[in-house]
Length: 390
Image (tube, rainbow, N blue to C red; front, side):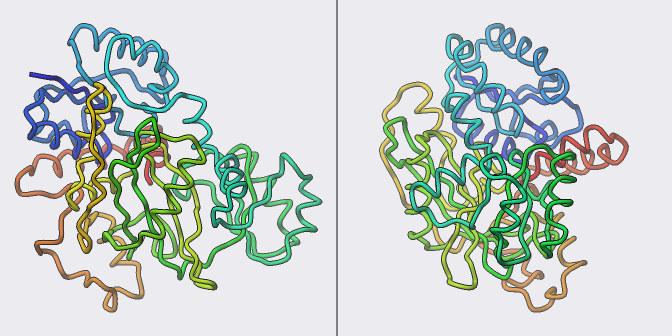
């Protein structure tokens, strides 16, 4: 029996990866730095292991990982959260000597994490994106003179979801707000504000090292929490080949391979989908690929072990993936709660699946609830968890 080690069992992508490989007859090992986590309570893992925190003890984590892979004779390694892919990429040369994996080199991984570098690649290659100013190239006083329209956004170059993003409504407060944000969150960029009335989209693409697209899926975000702009609470696969084409062009310009995720927002002023960022990790909603008939994870395994993978760009349109805990919060906060499409009160359907909730795997939601209860009492873990949500 082939074995797969899945890192980051606290994040929901690990649950989907575990289910995929369990159903394909693999020995599934899942790891996490805490006991109270979603996938530890799932029925799909054969083995659950604790490791040192990759956030606070990265060197100990890497040492554990190298030893564990050898002792357990792991065939393939799949990091499924936020922090571990970065460390796996950083120590890729050492890991590839003892285990199969398919992940970009560290310099490219860092480039994708950096919003400034991402936007520069987009601008050079005529990829539609918000107008962006780079304080490392121009003095902030000079940028202040260049910005003509407000509001604008100040964004940390390294950050996940909306963490650290600050809205500036006036030229008078630009410099002060910029300096405050940099002191708290590190180097930042200044970016044109795209009205949130435009629909947000994600394009998930799997490419080989020859940059051939093997599989892809595109989906929108009809609801978000917080309602004024946040992480999606429900997603739906859509027929937007234009967005997939832009994402493919962007990833090729980056020199990317493996899984790549591109975030877009459709600018309501000109109806153009504009690139917001690239995620070099599995995003929380990646399960929608499986819902739409796309097996990203087994293809990743095939690539890792050197098997030939035939391109298959088909996916089902109109498939929904719902993140119920956040969707409930959306309902409580949103003024559109009774006018939304799809209806909040549609809880079942052949084309509707849930990110975590499943009658076939009820333990996962128990693990999720225990994990979130633990977060209420662990400020450090809550801070790390917040930085991982996206």
